[in-house]
Image (cartoon, rainbow, N blue to C red; front, side, top):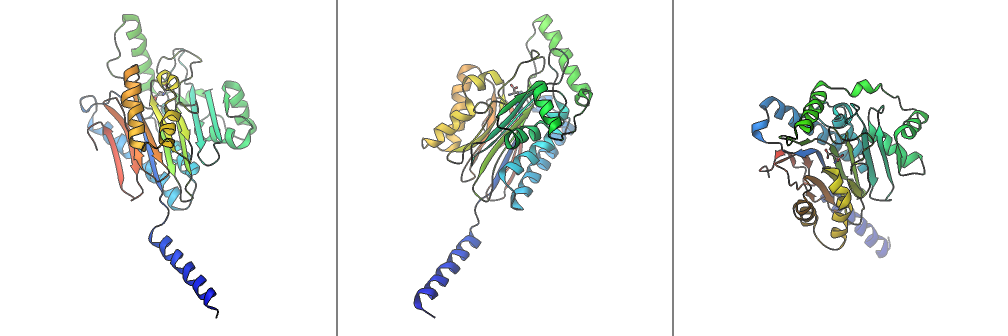
Length: 330
Ligand code: ASP
C-alpha cells in the first residue's frame, strides 16, 4: 500500500475519532410567555402544570434533534405541544380580543436560508405554527392573514376547526375582567403574556425560531402584534442567532427586537449580552415589558426578561435540562 493512501486512511480515521468524541452541538429553548408571574399569584398545582408542560415540550423538541431532525422540525414540534395546551396563550388557550374572538398569529424562520412564513388573525387553524411553516414551504409569500390564510390552509389540506374550539372559560373571564378594568380605569394587576416560542440548533448547524400567540387580551379586532412579524417577534440567521420574543408586541415591533439582537451578535457581541441589552436596556427604557429566548450558532442560550417571570425551558448543548418560571431561577 502506498504511504500516501495509508496517510489518507489515518487522517480519515482521526477525523472520525474527533467527530465521535465531539459531535456537533444540538440545543433547544422554549418560552411560554412573560409577565407579572409571581409565587404569590401562583398555586402549587398551576405552577406544577406549567413546569410539566414546558418539560414535555422541550423534551419532545430535543428528541427531534437527537434523532437527527432539523431545527425547524424541533421548533414546530415543541410549539405544537404548547399550542395544544390550554395553559398557554396560543392555539387552544388563546386569549380573546375585544370583540370576543380568538385571533391567532404565528411565524417561523429558517436560519440557513432566511426563508420565513407567518400567519396573522386566523380563527380556525388549530396549530397556527404548522400553517406558518406551510406558508414558508408551499407559497411564494412570507405572511398570509385572515380569510386568505384560512383559504390557503384549506387548499393545503388543513382541517379547520370551529372557532369555538379555542374558547376556554379562564380566558373568557380574563376578557370580562379586562373590560371591567377598562370601564373603571383600573390598572391591570396581573398581566400574563403566555405566548409561546422556540429556538433550536440542529446537528447540521442550522438555527430556527418560531413563535405563536393569541395576542393580548382585549386587543382591538384586527390588531397584530410582534409574534408573526419577522424581525420583531421571531428571527433566525445561521450567521448570528435565533430569537423568539414575548411581551407587549407594539414595543417589540418598534424596536425590531429579534433582528436587533441578531445584528448585535453578528457585530461580535455574545448572545447573552446582546439579548440582555435589548430586553433590559432598550425595551425597559421604552417601557416595553417582556422577554426573549435567544440562541447562537454554538448553542449558547440566553433567556432574559424584564418582567417578574417568564415560563421557559431549555436543554443545552451539554444536555442539561432547565425549567424555570420566576426571575430568581438561574
Ligand atoms: N407578543 C404578543 C403580542 O403582543 C403577546 C405575548 O407575548 O404574550 O401579541
